[in-house]
Image (cartoon, rainbow, N blue to C red; front, side, top):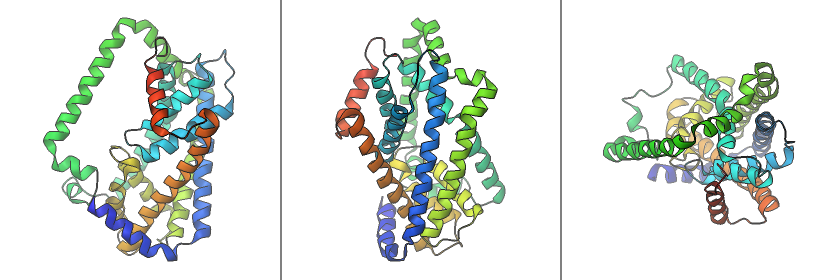
Length: 316
């Protein structure tokens, strides 16, 4: 935690040198990335419910609200908000199917992130397993240093998975049907590539371009190579989402991976500044979406509603 707050202090020291025009371009590209992803999710939902007309505006609102909540709530709580908001507008949908659509929506992300990670491994820039526990980090460091607690958490999660499987075992056929709806578009490959992959590839182009301009905004050597490395760090930092947005992990990994591209203080400023800018932007857009859709900005109340709605009979 101390490393994270140190990084924040360094960020404020470097704030005066930020290129605000480059920062604005980076945020614009980030928003474009989010927008095009909503088109992909809308097409997945439409394939899951072909008899319904799935309008884009509520899909956009639910998606950006979820992105904003994920920026400040650990454990992917924003995904639950996404599902709650879209089902609130379209009660014919079930949570099982909606959850499956999120899997479908992130399937290509997993493939592309893995390919970029493999590329990074060939570059020899990532810390080894022997170095990783010593990289200053907020969430991963704790995991490595508290093996017993980590094993307990893994055991608890395993027990939860077993309980969920047991609970749904009595409704296997119905469960499979609803799950299958969420991945229905995968069965039509031309449609999947046309209506999902095309949008997601475009979102990745915007994602990398956004990181390139963030590098420029904080005066770190801006190249495609460095933007891809920053993306690898972002993917690794969010792999275990125990802190909002992977806070802390990004700072330690970025300084290690981009060492030599700029002074350590500037790399810290880039990492924290990017995280702060994206978080504030995501939260601002999410606040507008949430107020339009549910007329409240009380996040705790929204989360409680989402959990209550998920447990209602017939909702899953």
